[in-house]
Picture 1 (cartoon, helix red, strand yellow):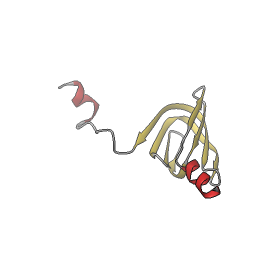
Picture 2: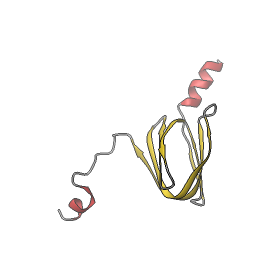
Picture 3: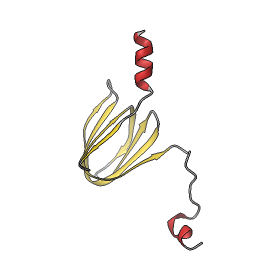
Picture 4: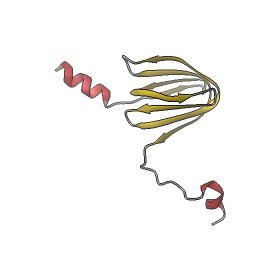
Length: 96
């Protein structure tokens, strides 16, 4: 029973953004890379890229699989391969 509950908890992920300044992500496996402008996080639902300014990691809790980030959050993006990638980038799509 306890194992079943633990398994169900691992299947969920939440991203909570408060005032574009505080970010809490659950379901975190690993922080792949980070600096003040970009954080790459491996989560249960795929890679998540967070972009912004003056960002720093307050806490990475391995036990509860949570990540706490502060800074000016500008973008949160999943990279999981389900969204088709645009060939040639933004400008090529603009000049079709």
